[in-house]
Amino acid sequence: MDKEQIARQLASMKGLSGSGNILSYLVEKIEGLVATMEPGDFVRSKTGSVSAVPVAADVWYLHYHENLLQGYFSPGPDFLHYNYSDYLESNFDFLSRLTGLKPLKVLTDLEALEIEEGFGSIIPSQYENNGMYWVNTLAFELWNTGIGMRYASNGPVNFIPNDYAGYIAFPVGQLGVMEVISILQETALSGYQFSAVDGNPLYLPKAAPEITDEEKPSLQSTPEMFPDMKDSNGNKIADQNYSFGRHIVESAYVIKDKCEYPASNMTAYTDVAPKKWMRYWVHKNDTMPVPGEFIGILTRPVSCPPHVWWFQESSPFLYAGNWVETNQLTSGIITAITTEEDRTDGGIGCLYTVKVQGCTIQVEATDFFEYHVGDRVAIIKTDREKATESFAWHDQARLKETDEGTKKANLLIAPFTFYKAI
Image (cartoon, rainbow, N blue to C red; front, side):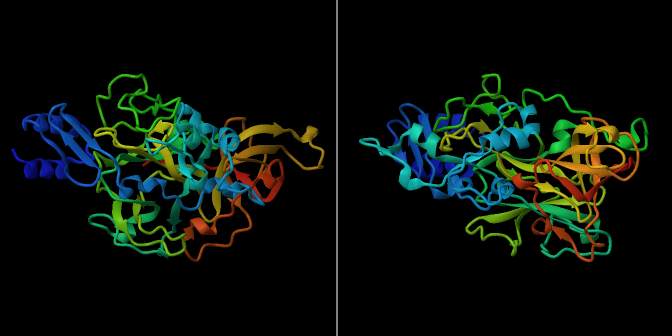
């Protein structure tokens, strides 16, 4: 086998899990070979090594866009240098079930980084201090029967528009970089039981699932230049396609069902060029999203051949996300209850403290139905008119730190749930 043949092997397998061992075997068959096949690829027959140092397109996930986390702060801090650790711990606490899962860290201040003399590399401690948590804002659009979408696209294979009720969308770069891209659904991670229908077999409760070792992220307590090639228990990875959630990319290839790539541009979003858009289409029979829950995008870069990922903390990591609501509905988790006799505002009935969009607010109920701490409750937005067009991510009001602990007169808890069993 000559160099051109190995180059073709690299091109066909580059970025796919397990290719390192195969290519190493092939390289060993050529005595004395040391060659650079293309920018970033290096092969050496004596050691059987195959390396893939990234070119610019390989680290597209470091090219950041609108940060969902900054939307909580008003007026916002210097969001390019703000440490969101405390906010993540208190407002994204449901992620704790995936122990150690962290958001993407990006470089927002390249000039502050120091370069090691003689090596031309960034000092890891400098990156750790300079890297900022970043969750790219997930775009979404949802619509009712008889209302079309505002941001049309061709859709997935065999697309019939009337069969779908919405989509989520996020910007991605070239394929072959991410071994797995998956959708994290908050209620699929933490479960829920709407109190209004406890024991009613016609509705779908969701128990919190057992998280398997294969679904847990692999962690680096001291972030390193390369991702782990081990699972959450420190064992060699048997299944390279591990990741929690609904997989839409595996083995670095798009799973076509309900997924469209590249999709049309989202003209109301910050320019994401040179990235393209990926959309996951929500079928009208789907039970996702539960209005008000967090929907995230987990991405896990390839680990073999070695892939420089710039000191991330977990594999996969949270790349994008949003609290996905509808025009008139959202939901939240009750964290405390003030009974009528304990209220100081003269109100009737219980006043409920509810975590919505990760923000703790106070909400009245429509009636005297009894709710409990820990219940996910449906919430009506009383200030929204009947929908005449689709509801998109930029139509959504964000709760902010100034809303913490305040009573919201435009929100009401109602005794109903979502997704009747078929």
